Length: 80
Image (cartoon, rainbow, N blue to C red; front, side):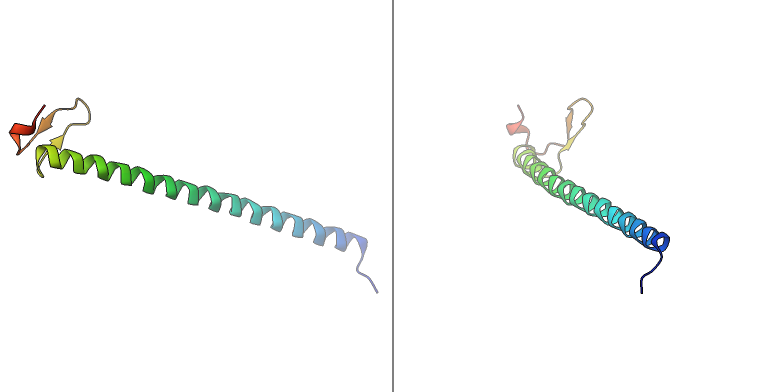
């Protein structure tokens, strides 16, 4: 006994669609993991630069990212 050819075709089509969606989800998860890794790398670099700024200008230093103006530098002798 076998199922009808039309039902078999319908089932194959559904399985194919499900597998395609699973593959798409897997691709997005891989892309997500890569983005998370890049985020951690950039945050690590930011923390390094931030520490350099703190060491050079003091812990309360503020930097205007628009024009580079430094304010609240507590270590005036190290300003350059």
